[in-house]
Image (cartoon, rainbow, N blue to C red):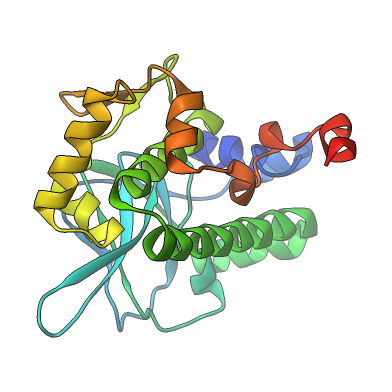
Length: 251
């Protein structure tokens, strides 16, 4: 019996590559076990050897590393439709930890079924490969974010990215979206102190660029926020953001 949670995966892959009806059906026929997980619960830890891939169904996940002194760096946030550990099909040993940011639903798909799917449908294998390459592009942009942007722009950039990722899978309402990420986790993701994050968020609010209430964020003017963030969405490689021929010609 098909599990509706796999619709998330189909929607996500469709946002970065065109799938045929047969390929969508094959994805929807995957066996999946969905679990309700609490916030701050590890799914796969550094040193583990996973035997399944994780699909974000609801909530937020993050990829992070913790140093011996206890300091933590968050390297990415993942939203519904993301399958952040598809690389575990080829890299046996986890070199980081994957965990929940908030209360989440996560689907687990056995590696043998993922391998069977990609062997029988090479274009789906290409879609997963593209997804992994986009993940790498996001890592590159995060390096630039930490190394070149000031705190104000750095945090604005994070809001732009999360909004567009959620919009691509139909999880925004106008310019509003769920953003259950604490200031401490924003600090871990942007290389800033909690105090610096708090001051930057206050300034973003005062400037009318974001409004946050009860875990929900609204962006009154996306253009102004993108300008403050020096944000170029090209690195997300979403189909709906693909440049038009006229724009390419103008460049």
